[in-house]
Amino acid sequence: MNEKDDRLYEFRIEYISDNSIGHNFHYYLARNPQEALSYQLEIMDHKHWKIKLIKLEKKCPYSNKWHDESSIINQ
Figure 1: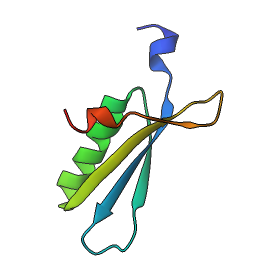
Figure 2: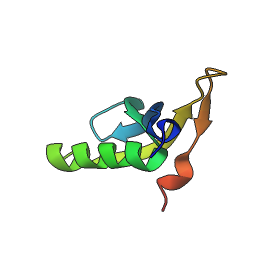
Figure 3: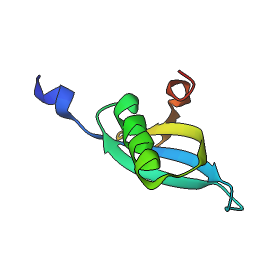
């Protein structure tokens, strides 16, 4: 694995829960969207959270904008 493969990106996952009025976010540092989603699913399982995932986004380190990666949620 070269150095480029080890780069971490910031991801945010938007979700809603039954006891919440608005949407909430969790932020992760991960190599790719699959890894960020796996972190979220692991914590949901560990804490027995019943939440609905809405969106997964990756922050571009150059433009400082969020890019939609939500297609991974539906797979």
